[in-house]
Image (cartoon, rainbow, N blue to C red; front, top):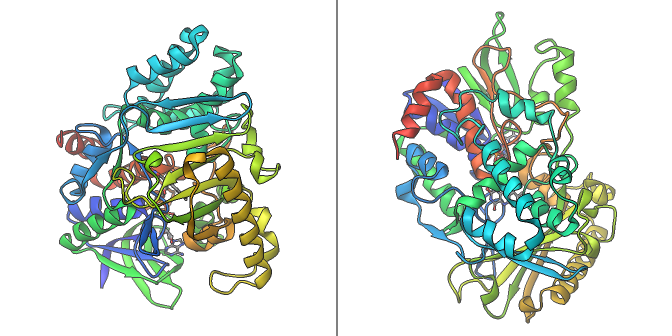
Length: 494
Ligand SMILES: Cc1cc2nc3c(=O)[nH]c(=O)nc-3n(C[C@H](O)[C@H](O)[C@H](O)COP(=O)(O)OP(=O)(O)OC[C@H]3O[C@@H](n4cnc5c(N)ncnc54)[C@H](O)[C@@H]3O)c2cc1C
């Protein structure tokens, strides 16, 4: 059978691309290397407690906000239950030296007021920063449905970094740390992240903050049922090995690792750019293009601690805690001991329902080089020395968390640690938390390629997070469906 489109990868961007194309009447096949759909966000259970993996919470899901519109357009809205996080403080930022704590309330004006109270001398800088975040994120197509091209945002990749902007508006180091803490949500430090991508991630949380009842798995199930309704064929456990091209260099098919060939007239690849490079024959793209993709730097990786406790963690109901040792979070202090690095903690189970969140997840930046010693091993087949290393990291993280978050102390029923290697094998990618860095001065992969019918989507193309991944799907698929039509249809979902 010949498909109109194959879509490679079943993350958020792959599932969204498949829905957009199938909704437009195309025959689509969605292909995933892992055994299950959407491995990055589907989470897992231990001792009966559900742990989210790649999706804990999101902004812009309030009624009429952009993610709400995307979900309506994609047919997801009626199949999920969104749950608001704590309106008075959904994210707490705690600095240990100097001692400082602030909780971020929901809403742009409320957050601005809270920051004014915490930094009374800095009202003007705070207003400048917040206005700039909103204005900049509004230049992103699909965040602003009237914005037509990514040119504005991309030019900003060569423009100021978050640090440049903060240095221009204030000398207050604690305020800069507070306004930079969301760097943990895109994995690129303030000196490197383009202000525009930082604004795209942070501004969503200024609008409204929700989780989805049942977590990432509930979102996967919702997509699964939409894909089924649209007759999208889904192949899981079937990695793509290569892309096949016609003599005129248009896309002709996809070769799977097991030897099967799927013919197609079009293809959207949502895998990491380095994986994409492995799919294409040397002659197909200019050496300069290949070099740019090969040179993309990876966002920070992480050590992640998953803890089951003997009691619910009330203090994490509807909120997350971000902690940094000092105001200096440059490069996430990755070359320092774990206890000196910034990290964040989020609830396991259901954030907003007391009694269900009997545990927590802690995510602490790390470098992939920290697990180099075991890089030849794969999940389920690791040496004993690696298990000991993980136990040691888990112990350090737990002691550190218990010291600085007394509210999370308690009897541990079960504890597991994931490392950059776990991340590499679970995401089928190099191991960064959020794919490649959106670093100033670095090439940003475009959705359109020089091969007719071949498009790129995924967090590398727009921005990390559910919102960024879905935007990347729109940026790729609008070339097929028509730019204006897609935006009009999304806007009509209000
Ligand atoms: C620990 C963690 C916590 C996070 N928390 C949040 C959060 O709270 N909120 C939020 O909005 N975002 C969060 N994110 C970010 C979010 O998960 C990602 O930005 C998003 O899932 C990326 O989606 P994607 O479709 O671009 O990529 P992916 O989900 O990585 O999809 C790519 C897919 O391609 C598949 N693949 C790779 N190679 C092949 C091949 N050869 N053949 C076929 N398939 C292949 C992979 O298995 C993968 O399924 C978090 C991420 C992590 C890691």
